[in-house]
Length: 151
Image 1 (tube, rainbow, N blue to C red):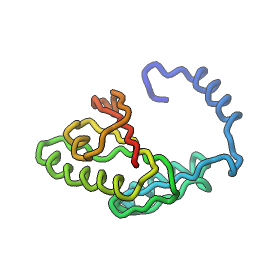
Image 2 (image 1 turned 135 degrees about the vertical axis):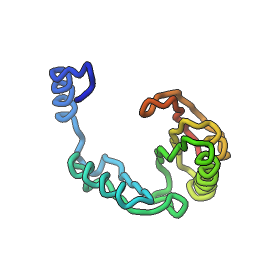
Image 3 (image 1 turned 120 degrees about the vertical axis):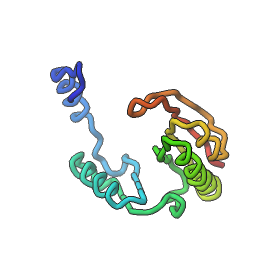
Image 4 (image 1 turned 90 degrees about the vertical axis):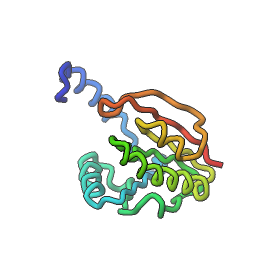
């Protein structure tokens, strides 16, 4: 709403339409799970979930991804892991991305994973081949959103 060309009338029209079409039948909604190693990030996310009115469909826990287990036989993971800005950060993050790729490969068979990053060297550290890729900007950073099919 603070964007330079924000049009409040258009926003309210679209928002009202989407709100009237919102599906609330629990039988048709997917379960949503989230985790983060930061309890502060989880608290912020829980507050946003509460404000959105979807707390009964979203389950969160404080946990490193490397320790997670799939909550269902198949699903979709979407993550925006740290990117690193300085070279020494990139080097230390390679291990994180390698662990993420290993966890996905060995524990999330039947799932798909979508990963956003601005650093291609980190995507290569995952050691999985993306089935689709899109260029995008995330917070002003030229980034890539890659989808991985996990077998």
